[in-house]
Image: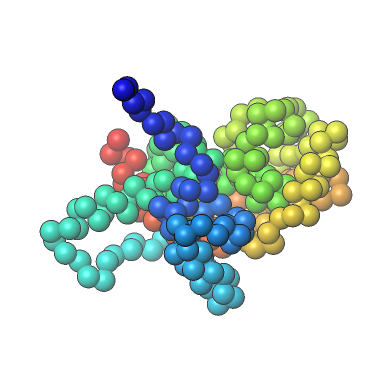
Length: 239
């Protein structure tokens, strides 16, 4: 009997969260899962939903060091943590290609006398798909990418189909009028926290967004999990 190699590329979306031990997608749907394998994850997630943890800011500039280092397992743990951090960021960004992330790192490094971590996050926040997600127009970055690729989003009155399109200050994002109901449904069902950042001027009546000045953005409330950027940036820069 010949066994075919199992393709793990299209692994169910929610199953990826179990290994990451983090609800990267911020979906409360996982609380309804009743299988035994979800038990530990749901228990851990419910703890994070408590008000004193839910609204706690995450300092993305921190360098995480183990409390109990062990020289015999340090390399193995460091590799695992780096891989987990990269997978979490990639899943949050809708399986963005490694090439695009590496380009963002190079751009961040070229800006001298600036915090690389902060510049990298600013470059991510300029992406069109992420702006639609932050504005509550879409329930996830992956959902935003689908709308963009189908030609339902306009930038400065021109249809844009590039998922990673970089916005500039003053750009106007609008929606094709015949798709208003789909976006309105997403807005009604959206989770209120985290709230949209200040550099986005949103008009929910006309379904328009003006991209403002992203400088001095508060990165501590943008992500509900620690990005471990110091590991991701070093690892992708080596490759």
